[in-house]
Amino acid sequence: MKSLWMCVLAVLCSAGIAAAGEPGSSRSDAAAAFDRLKTLAGAWQSDTKDMGKARVEYEVVAGGSALIERFTAEKMGQPMITLFHMDGDTLRLTHYCMAGNQPTMVARTIGRDGTIAFEFAGAGNLKSPNAGHMHDATFRLIDAGRFASRWTFYENDKPKFTEDNEYTRIQ
Image 1 (cartoon, rainbow, N blue to C red):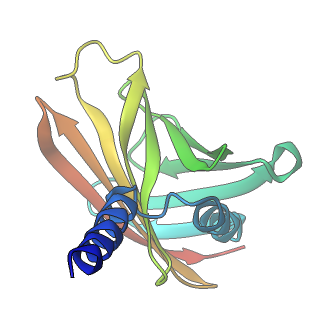
Image 2: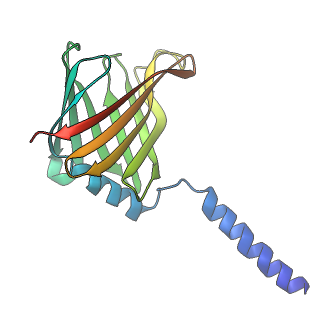
Image 3: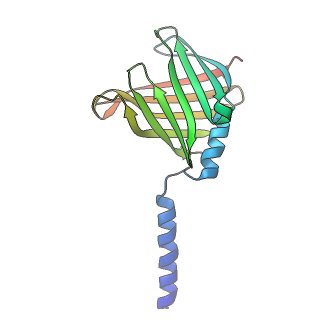
């Protein structure tokens, strides 16, 4: 009986260790999510709440190893750029923000429903941990002609605002 309990305990511990890993962190999940993101290649538009009409263009570059997002909007002076790429077994993005910093995020959750959730992993040119920066980003690929994104901006270690947009393919 004691050996049965030891086996059950060993199975439960190994399951707990496996569950403690980062969701979506396996090479196949992250690579599949990156491949799904690359299907966004082309031009998209949205009517945003605060910035007027927005346009997002995606381009697969560097032999398929990177995806560039170029975001422009009517009420925004210059475009912002986001670069997606694999780093070993991890899907990452770096957002070149109009706030003047470059947050890097890691895909922590990769859903079978087309949702890819990125969480803050560090930043370049962040004056202090309390300085304003994009902290989280979630993409939901709805179908071949639509996707949604949610970007959360943090300041003083808490959310300050969230940008939710749904985009329609125009090219």
